[in-house]
Image (cartoon, rainbow, N blue to C red):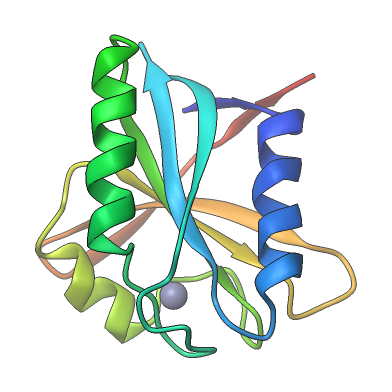
Length: 132
Ligand SMILES: [Zn+2]
């Protein structure tokens, strides 16, 4: 998936603002290109897990559909651990296997964003082609 540095910076900023809790949201896209970052509330307001707030999910999905785009990715942050899916993340992805999962770690000084496909309990890293 291709994503601009500007959009990655938006995700990183969200992660910093919501720390120590995990942040989450959706990334809109078209033809494999990320086009917009939509922030959502984390229902759990927790440093250990996240759920895209159902009201936000509905609102954002409508906005993405209205724009003629699709959900390219779901993002969330890890504030204490590396940018790799936890078992909780793998379990959660069973309900929604299609999007790329972006995980932004702000556990260290240098923020890291990585992308994964999480399907049927398996995790595969997907390359992020960062532009600009
Ligand atoms: Zn996670």
